[in-house]
Image (cartoon, rainbow over all chains, first blue to last red; front, side, top):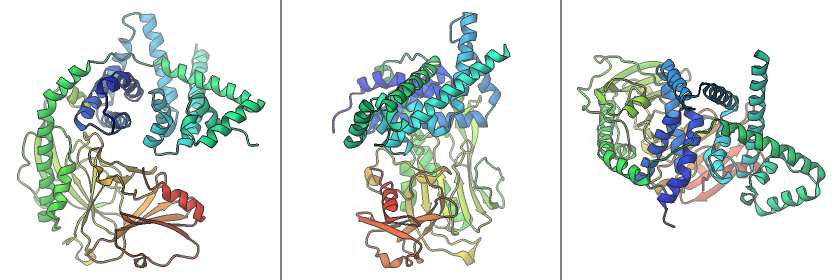
Length: 170
Length: 374
C-alpha cells in the first residue's frame, strides 16, 4: 500500500472539507472547527482510504451537529448564524446585506433539494470523484451523473425562483 | 441509436466518464460527436452546471487552515483526554451489561461485552463512575429522548448516573450546553411493540438520540449506539441469550455477538465498518442498500446461530429476503422456495448468501451483487 502524504492531503482537502461542512452547518467557524476535528481523528485512526473517510466522518459530525441544534435551543443557533453572517464581509453594511441575502438564498435553494441530491452536489463541489460519491451515497457510479444533473437543475431553479420572489416583493 | 441521458452528459462535463465502463464512455463520446440534438442538450446542461457552480460559490467560505504541525500538536495534547474517554466509556458499557443481567434477568457472555468495549472509540469524558445501580422498581425513572419506535414501555432501569465534564468551549458549543458539567445517565428500556416485538434499548448517554430501532419476530436484541462522537458512529448490535423473567413463555435461545454496524434508517440501510478493523471487509451486507428493511429474524430455532433472514420491501406489497447462512450450514435448513419467487445465491468464506424475491433471476443477481461492498 502506498504511503499517505498527510501534508499534501491536508493542504488539498482541508478547504474542500470546510466548504462541504459549511453548506451543512452554515457557520464558517464551526465548519472550520469540524474540519479540524475530522483531521485530528484521521491522524489518530490512520484510515486506509483517507479522503473518503474524511468526508464520511465530516458528514457524521455535521449530522450530529444538526441533531444537537434541533434538540437544543434553536434560537441560540439562529443568533449564532446571524452573527456569523453579519461579520462575514468585515464591516461594510451594504456588502453585509448583500452577502446575507445571497447566503440565505443559496441556503434555501439547497434545502429544497432532496437529501441525496444535496449530498451528491456538495460532495462533488468539495472535490469528490464520482466513484467516491457513489461509495459514500451507496449508489452506482452511473447514477451519480443523473443525481448531479437533477440536483444542479433544481438548485438553479430554486435559486432563480427565490430571486424572482425578491424582485416581486420590492 | 439511443441518445445520451442527462446523467451521462453531466459525467462528460465533469470529466467523469473515465469512471464509467470503457465501452459506455466511448459510446457517449462518439454519440455526442455525431448527434446534433445531444450536442445541443450538452450546451444546455453545461449552462445549468455552470449556474449551479456559480450559485454554490456565492456562499463559499474561504478556509485558512492551521498548519498540519499545529494540528498534530493539538491531537497530541488532546490524546490523553480521548484515551480517558475510551476507558470511561468501556466502564459504562460494562455497567450496562451487568444491569441487564441483574435487573432484567438476561445473561450475556463475557466475550460479547469485550467486543462492545472494543468498538467504543471516543466519547465525551465522563468524570464519575456510575453510581449505585438501581433497578426498575427503585430507580429514578428518567426518560430520555431515545426512540424505540414508540412501543409500550414495559420496564425501564436506570443503569448508572454520573457527571460529564465538558472542558472546552468548542465541546460545549457542539453539545449545545453552557455548563461545565452536565448530568449523564445510562438506562435500559424493555418495550413491546404492537407486533409483539420486544425491544431492549440500552442508553449510555442522555445526550444522544437513538437510531430508529428495528427488529422483529420477538427476537430480543440490543442495539446500542455507544458513542455519538465516535467518528464512524459505530453501532453495536448484539443478540443476547434471553432468559427473560418478563416473558418466560417467549423464551428464546439465541446467543451470538452480531457486531454488525448495519441498521435500517428508513430510506435504506447503512453499513459502517470500523476503519481500523478489517475483519468485516469481506462480509456481505445483511440487506440490499436502498430498500426498506421490514424485519430481521434468525434462521431456524435452537441455541446455535446459523444465519439471518432480512426482509426488505420492494414495490407495493412485494418483498424480498436476504438470507445469510453461517459457514458450514447447509441450504436444506431453508424453507422450500415459493413458486412465485426466484432465488439466486452465492457461496463464499462467510457462508451462503441467498436472495429470494418476485423478480427475474437477472434482476436478483444484480441486487445480490449490491450486498458486497467491495
